[in-house]
Picture 1 (cartoon, rainbow, N blue to C red):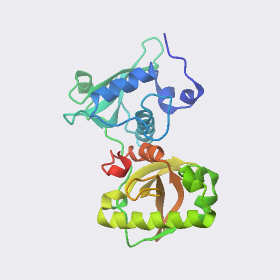
Picture 2: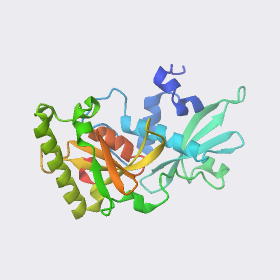
Picture 3: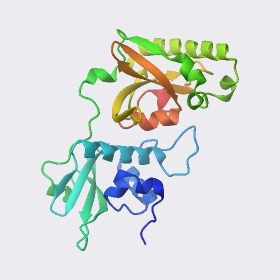
Picture 4: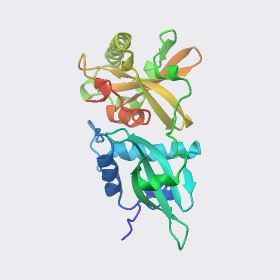
Length: 265
């Protein structure tokens, strides 16, 4: 029996592209084939199984579709998931046409050495999110302009702060935020990997934008409570939005598995 798709899936490009079967089975199959990773949220409850992997797969598909990296060979279609097996073989998502309608359905996840991937030469390419590797690192020559008033007055931002921080008077909240920001910059100076790249797509950046995430330790000197998203604008970095760690991990994982412990607990 085919899975009845809720509205969020019907609007999703991957679910519109092909019939995928049971989502939980699909995600667990990919998880078991790929290198072990943490695909569950840490701070936010979520009813969907493996929510980070779900988000990763959906947004990876959107990116390879934009880049024209979905390949077809006879009745088969495939794209590169960007994930690898424990033996570092690339993993591909393979679809096949239904004889009666020509509609696509998910067939299997394939390693690059899999028999069905011999149908593709060359193999589908991985998605790409940047052209200059320097974009992945914090540039200390640029000024950092953070709209603190917007952050502490915007309910979407303040709702993500720890409850005890939310209850502070505004001037104390601003001072706490500034202290955490200064601490984060010093942390980046000691270890450049502290600034974690993320790929963000939203109303302000509909075609997607590479940004950096920096940790804000508001209640503990080491453990981050939030991530501040910053992006280049002229000769400066601009920051207007704070993300929960789960939101940050969702966005960061599109580019690579973060190896800094503040976003990989």
